[in-house]
Image (cartoon, rainbow, N blue to C red):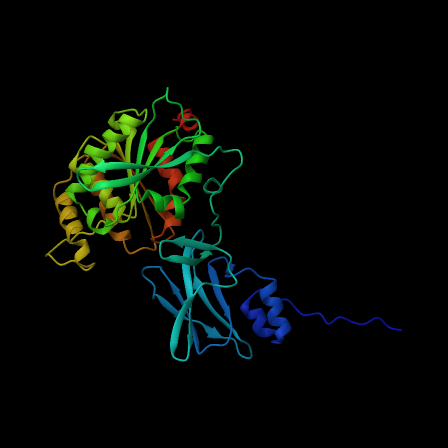
Length: 387
């Protein structure tokens, strides 16, 4: 009696191989079961979706490219695909737009487990060849966690307002610590793994133990846009409050303001209004809108006070701090403003480090730059040995 023969289904590892082979349901099932998506091959990243639809579009946030790319249906299958040239180490967030009955629905990639989260939801993430999620942005058993708490402050500027406080794992009242104030700090914790980053960099002695204040605003787009009240709240109320309640090193060299997007504008404008009070600035993807001619502002009325502030600062640049770390993604629309800001900051004599990445305007881009920024601004015992 002969043994039953099992039919072998060839496994395709590219769209071309799938197109050249059998297009049975078994072959397509094997294709999806034995590949990771998107398909990455050197600079080619192929986005793949499976299902019945009138059309499928790739929606992404890479400034300079069309925001929507139609996928092509592979004949004889329900497989849709599109290949994008993506340089090595790139990181791109995206969704699929599925067209049915004349209407589009944006969805995540069901075959890609990589997700990035932000206050508006989540996106799928494509990793170009060579990109890796930093190990220091994940929980590590050997890194003792810091302690988090929420504190209330009665502000004469804004009324009763809370802020978060992070104390390092080795915190002792008998010691004195640097102070890092993070705009949108709670979002940094939720979406940029700031807590894990601090735990790991401190445990590795790459940065010193420090006290971290996490600020937020119920009206950030107005308050962060060079609002004098914000500078008063941070400098005249929050910092003295922190110095009364925590053992801080009360000198400019050990104070740092940090923020991303409009939070970077808030950090910069606060330091600009109080030059010399903050010795360090960490600015990520700053919304540093300006005009070279005329009064027009293509980004809308919310940016008007930012444009006025940046035009003044660019016309009369002055040192406001000692060290400034500035980063921006190459794939975000703000890359022009941030690149243009580099020579302005350098002209003041401030010590500047500028970093670009193949990424967009998002929290994980800002997460991935934290080690470089924090360890340069605050070199810990391990790094100081090599300086």
